[in-house]
Image (tube, rainbow, N blue to C red; front, side, top):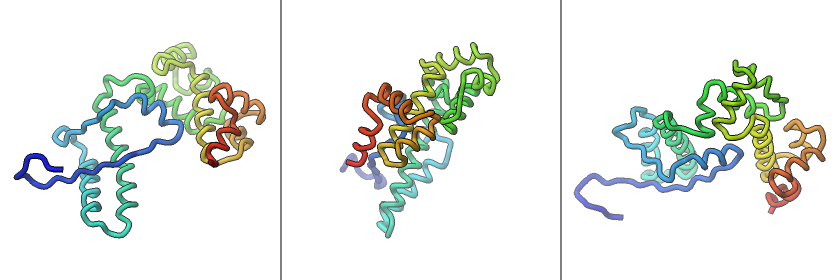
Amino acid sequence: MKSGGGGPRSLIACCTIGFEGPTANPLLELLPPVMHIRYAEHSDTVLPNLLSMMAREADGQRIGSATVMARLADIVMTQVIRSWVETCSDNLTGWLAAVRDPQIGSALARIHRSPGEDWPVDRLAALSGLSRSRFSQRFKGLLSVSPARYLLQWRLRLAESWLRNGYMSLSQVASELGYESDASFSRAFKRFIGVSPGAVRDSGRG
């Protein structure tokens, strides 16, 4: 590709990143079509250094360059999203705003770390330092769903990912996510996902 001329040679790296797992849906829904990080406006030196490393790998074509490039691309994408979040923090809404909220973000972190644990609203509110009504109001205001509904969605998105990738059996998933029986898990899964856990597991094998 040629454009202009006379200046220093530029290297353009193009890559495709696939997102997998339950955090992808709310994240992708919030990202803008284009995220443009300007070097002159970026005070963090990590991203320019990562891009320089990618350029050296692309130019050098050494053994293992493809693997190194793939790992660097993951880190670069994470840094780009982080930079976007930090520079537009005043305008954040939805899931990212909830994650950055001190009280609601703390509750989300607990749910994400231990999805199979019992998380009644009273307990989450107390751990967040808020009254039940204040916690529920702020949670729903940011995420447009109740804490109980969010917990259900998180569990079943995890379940879908684990089953599709063959990480666990149906019984293991049900137990890990706090369901008393395979049957109760299967009913909840089918209501939310629209198909049975077995169908999702079998589709992953194909």
